[in-house]
Structures are given as C-alpha cells and as structure tokens.
Image 1 (cartoon, rainbow, N blue to C red):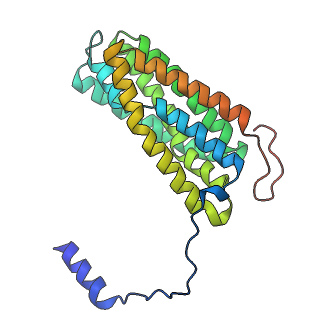
Image 2 (spheres, one colour):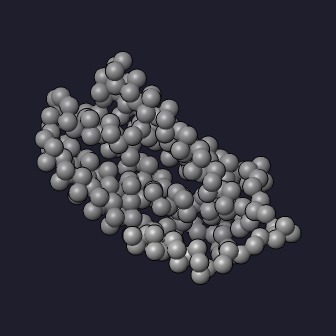
Image 3 (spheres, rainbow, N blue to C red):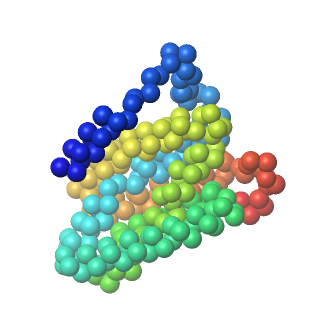
Length: 225
C-alpha cells in the first residue's frame, strides 16, 4: 500500500518534464578514451577472468578435506564483511593521498596470496585466517577500481568509462567461473585458486608497469605512486 500511494502522488502531483529535441545527448564513445584507460580496462579484465565466483571459496571450505560446518563458516563470513568495511573506509582515504593505483596493486597482491593459501589449506583454522584476510582485498579494491576508472577518463566521458568498466568486468565473470569449474573438476579443488592467484599477480604487475602516474586535476605528481 505505501508503494501504491507513493506512485499515485508522483503520477498526480509531479509533472513530467518534456525533453527538448534540441537537448544535447550524452556522448558514448569508447574510442575517445585514451590509451591509459584502455590499458587499465584490459588489465582489470585479465584480473576478472581469474576472479571466479566466491561460491568456489565457500565450496572449498565446505568440501574435503576441510569439511567446515555451516555455522562456523557463517561467523567467518561475518568477520570477513566487518574487516572489508573497515579496510574500505581507510583505503578510500589512503587512495586520496597516494593515488588509486598503488592501493589497487596491493589489493590484487593480497588476492594472489589468499588464493594461493586457499589452494593449500586443509583445516578450518586456515579458512578462518585466509577468508578473513580476503576482506582486505575487497576493502582495497571494490570502490577504488571504480574511482580509478573515473579518474582515467575526461569529465565528458566518465559515464562511458564507468559503463565500459562494468561491461568488461561483468562479461568476464562468466568465463571466470566456467574456467574455475573446469579446473576444479578436471584437475583438483586447488587448481582454480592457483589459476586465480596467477592472473591476479599478473594483473598487479601489468598495472604497475604499463600505467604510469600523471598529475590529475592540476595537482603536482605524487612520487609514491
């Protein structure tokens, strides 16, 4: 009922503004984005192809030889989310000071370490340690990657940049999980995590080497980045 009443108020009392035919249409032109953004898009897509669904982490914890119970894993997940939220807040502040790129690189390296560890663990204690540390990766990259995509684009193409970022990373999720499932079934439950660790490490190295810093918004260069 509240939703129906809200709709009636909008429909009756809020007039719809007519769009002029002469109004400027938003520009969508991926080719207009510069080389740095295109390299970033390629690198983040490489990372995404190795970043399979977190369901594989859950399956790893619940399967042999670990056999972690549902309730203990639920508490692990709560701790993971708490650490992710805390790190996200601090990472946003840090990235404003030293730049987005070094924060993303460290986050991807944390991902590589965690996935390597998840490939090797055999006890619930290992899940407790490494899945919680996984929250550091989330906190250091989730919002920062989107902000970096915006930073690399000119003001009039920021919508295009964000759309391209979501499109390429979203499309990569399906093959990432298909590859992980194939590796799990064809080789071993550890194989998808070694694969994810390798792609994340490669992406971190490429981001560090291929994209150089430059002054943004008229600011002086940041030597730490």
